Length: 254
Image (cartoon, rainbow, N blue to C red; front, side, top):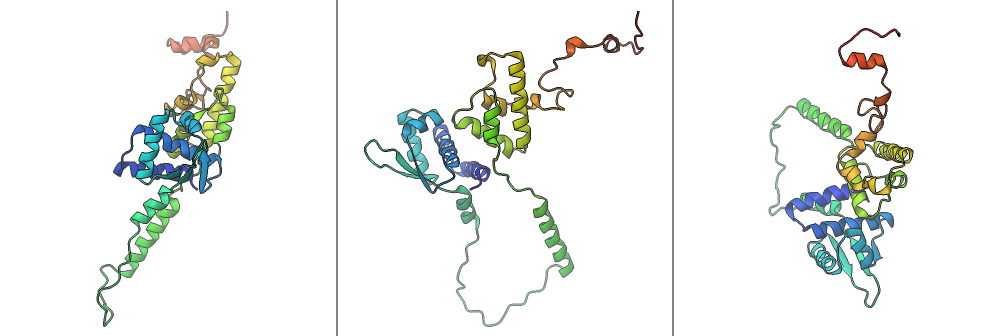
């Protein structure tokens, strides 16, 4: 199961079959749980856990679950009593592929003789087009599965809870951000928070850190070569200060 491919297929499906925000939140919660469980065909999870992951109350969760099941995103069944419900994930990648795959139709009439049609383009030109298409496929990178989210969550200075953080992490990777950069930025930010003894309430929420591209501030080489913010502005030399004010001569001392 390719986590990122499923997320992309999900949002492709939403263009044709829009879902309420509650259903979207529940789908992400179920995907997160299935991912952590190793993508089993079916799995059980308590409604209380889904409520914490999705941020939905009991009634909203039931409505969202029925909506997803009705529209074919998931399947579920109650096990009665106080037992957790059983869920089955439907691969949207497989469903989308099946819908787009051309259907073979039986020929209504028997062909008596083979049909010969003139080639609309020379053979050499067709071969060139085939090579170009093959080259394009080779140069198109595949969607990479998420591999380092656990490392990101482990080093980030605030606890990563719920599916929202993981969703934003997947969105960042899906948009082309290398996972190495995300883990490095989280580590750099954690180092700064420890060094400056930043209080817990002032540490950025991990979902905002990812969604608002705040991680870019904590990559080496970004923002004038510093990590995080410029912590050395108060240590500028007199020569640097003179250059800022237009004096290009070097100060040689008193």
